[in-house]
Image 1: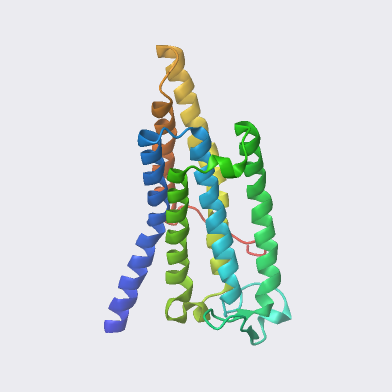
Image 2: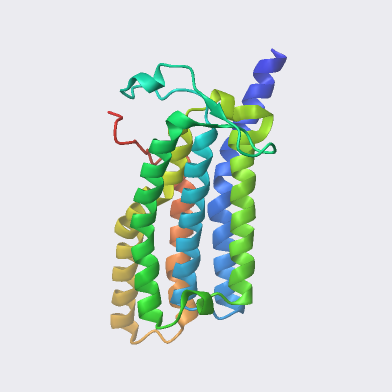
Length: 238
């Protein structure tokens, strides 16, 4: 009974941790908009950095997962995994995971990088010049929180020994799918509302008000999506 209670408590704690990422990001966004006069460029840049950080960290941690992938064709998933120790302070990686990790890492970067390029072109500034001290602090907080999340879910108590690479990759792909959902079902409707309001009352001169009109509902939607309301499937899964 004690083990069951501990497992339930751990499961609930892990579920709550899934909400931290969007909450942390959106707290920084609201603070930046209200107190540091962030423009749409800083807001979009922080979103994109968070997506990139989550994708890269969780896809890379899939290298450490020891369990086979259910439903994946190929003899290599039926054989015992071959561990490769690169650094003593890190878990071993498994050679059979390398191709899969490389594939999804490249896919994600090809998906994300055009957004960074478009943002730089619109801002007409280099990417490094867009990162103010306040934005840098927000990025650092996101990186630290995601590293803690990776550590808790896949490294602590050698959890990687009981995880498959597919589990980590799904988490890494989640923000890419989330981005599409948010654009279609939050950004577009909010844009219609903002444009309609501007048509009724005249031009909305407050950039702060307009940005908050996007950031707050997007934040609410992201928190809602963490509760298993967005499923992610890999290419081979039916």
